[in-house]
Length: 299
Image (cartoon, rainbow, N blue to C red; front, side, top):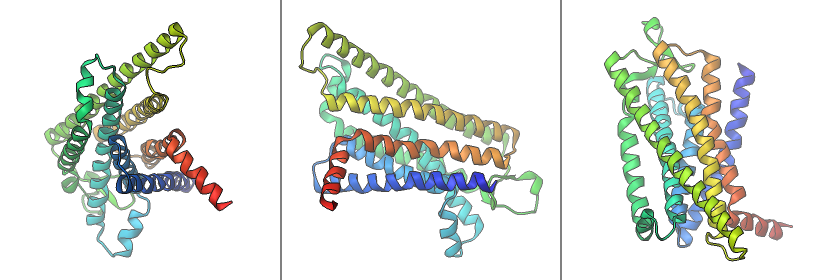
């Protein structure tokens, strides 16, 4: 188990550092320049991913709570509630990112084109409602998670060294599973639909370029690159999300959590927030230029 935990710590470090860099970069863009709606979305997604890694892998957060001498019960509730909210935000914002890019590259004749002018307003409203929804729907964690105790041990499902899930009514458990599964299925369906739509636009654009033999581009090169990046992130997210959902769903139904499976689930859960900033850094020309300018000044 220690070797698996070491892998988790390494993964967490690998994920937090580039996410911190991106958060500072997007904050600088938002405060000092005229930000694009995409920058606002990416900044929030980066913040969410930092919190996901810190709470999802139980990294650093446990040490912070211990140094503050906070009880296990409060620590477990805060950690699991934050982790659940951030997971919900991650899937919602990734979906928003996909929808936003689909609207951005949509032709002027399409139905989506009418939303282009008010994108910033729609993005701000969508982000607000996403936070409200996920903060509300995850409140069950405050009631059914707490510090592990030897009393009624058989009725608790131990999920970390110090935390456990308390037994809940079958109807409540079913409603929670149904609500979270419905949300995930709906958002993944939207992502796959917008992904297929963007793929169709890119293929049509490529065919038109071949027929016209022209150097003029119907879709600007940065937008085309951004679309491919988002498609890559969507595919990767869908795969890791459903592996996580299957493990969680099976564990809740059987009411058992094997430590090795739990560690593997944490690794899968942290894979998306770890890979995302690396892909964003590589694909964003502004970041690459910033790093090149920084390197030229240092050397």
